[in-house]
Amino acid sequence: MPHMKCPPLLFLLTGLGWLILSAVLGLGLFLAMTLGQHVPPYYRTLHVHLSLVGGVAQLMLGVMLSSRLNQAPSNSYPVLYAAINGATIGLLAGFWLGHSLVIGAAGLFAILACLSLLRDWIGQAQEGLRSYLPWLYGLALLVLLGGLSVGEGMSLRLFPHQLIGQARLAHIHLPLIGFVTLIIVSTLYHLFPTVLKGRLHSASLAHATVGLLPSGMLVLLTGFLLSSLWTQLAGGVIMLAGAATYGFNIFRTWLDAGRVNNVAADHLVQAVVFLAVGIVTGMLVSVNFLFDPPGVPFGHIHLVAYTHLLLVGFFLHTAFGALSHLLPTLLATQRIQGIKTRESYLAALSEIVERWRPVQVGALSVGTMGLAVVAALLWQFPLRSIPAQAATWVSLSLLLLSLALFAAKISLMLAQRPTD
Image 1 (cartoon, rainbow, N blue to C red):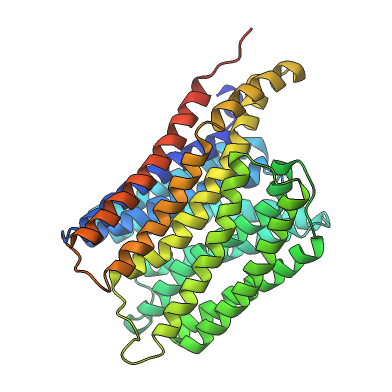
Image 2 (image 1 turned 90 degrees about the vertical axis):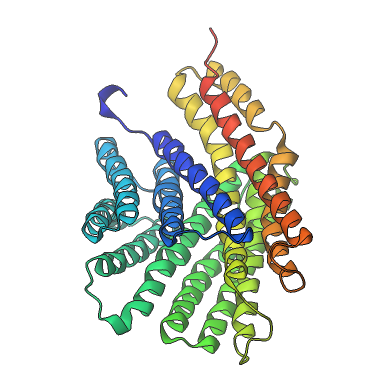
């Protein structure tokens, strides 16, 4: 690109590429699991880090930069881009080779990228910005830095053996629950009214969400580290209150705007539903383990189904919704200078995004719930039974269909050049 600029569009497209690759790998792993095939553990590790570091984290960085809530200088974009993608490639190589030093070096790249963004946020905070959004971004970055630091300590074997379990939980949940969820909630409060061309229903409810969700996450993480199910439940209750406040505010914003029907709004509203479903399901899992033995059997496939209500239902719906709005706008802005011509080109790109809207949104939602159906069927049927296998194939086919449709739209938008 000219002048060595690396715009947010590149972060978004690269993050989406990593995320789709990870999703395809994840679908293959789930299929192998239900077929009873042995899968080496490092494949799951590759899937998780490919999705969260290369995919979700990079998408969130692109959204932050494109929203201008994080005013990083344009000449710092290539360094940040190289750091996050170098970290992703290094982590994949390290886990594939089983080499802890490579993993540690890749983690250091991710920490440096995080520190770069944190420096820019501190500069913003010193300017006395009134909005709570930059402060929430700053908190999310601190949480991410904490999770990455714990992972770095694990790769370099800095934790004693008896603390490895707690360190692993902190490494997983700090970036996943803390960073990603906080970034998504704060970004949607900024982005959703823009998608609807309206106004946020209540700033007071937004502030309540900002207080409840981080507090619930802190209590939940404490429960994980202390292995206290009651503390985990308390954190879940607080998080559920935050999610309910957030969901009500988003839903009322949608109603106030006249129930807008477009692909971005559909995905983002569905994401809110899956956030609440995921939190309630997590609380039920904790209640189940209050009994000894647990009230219902809970195996690895049940864990995968539960976690992917958030990983696919909440995160992927949010990613698709945000990108459906941002990519046409960024492409039109980058490719065309004239406002009138840009509006015509933007309309053409938006028309591509809206194609097959019900199929894309519905397939992602039903396919995600299908994973939970597979897990529920295992309480009544064997893994290789016809009902379990049929539910598996239907669920994975729907998820793959939604991914393929969205990837095809991105390709069509990139190929759609402005006309004279």
